[in-house]
Image (cartoon, rainbow over all chains, first blue to last red; front, side, top):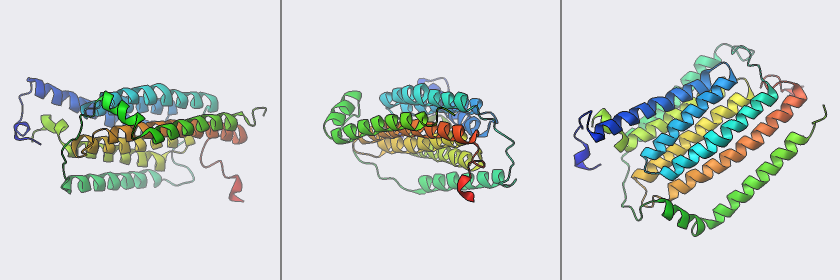
Length: 180
Length: 108
């Protein structure tokens, strides 16, 4: 971090407003995540997931990657959430009461586990002294395209095959037992 | 460091990733339906992606690697969602329920 960033900017300067937008973005992400995991109805959970993913796209934008932010909106908000909505409509799940045979301790125990994990990772991340290295390129969309078709071309082709096989497999699995 | 310059700090993004991961773990543990668990798994993947992107922006010498990795995580997550949801639909046809407690045919 360079020294000019250490001083706090005024709230109504450009830097200060960017900070405010980032904080709003942060709140959107976390609140969306909580809705996705806590709402009783699955349709609301999907809506929370969409909100959370839009927040994550904003986080990517703040990390100097507008292309990945665009892809996040396109793939997650546009495709994955719609697929989950279709599954909810087709399977029509009625989420029963949260406390079932698993016992009433699941909620608090799950929360404790999650808080311990998140807190532990956070402490670990903040306490470690990460080594910063000099950049060798600018990470722009053009560079990503060149790298995808040169250095990462093998992985690029493999991921296409994985997606093709996954979609064929999904069709086959969902087709069987259609009569009953 | 003030609260308005948080977006210029690696630690902020690592904490966001950890919190998303924790929310996902909480969802997986407490949800009773398979679709709810799938939604929570998507949150875990998002947390991992945020971590990759944070290191990509602040420490990595080549800022393309993390972006490419995140794109691949997205593709694999899409494949996972497609297969998972078709399995859920097949399970629903068989058991007329997607509650994880009901699909216990092998329990004996």
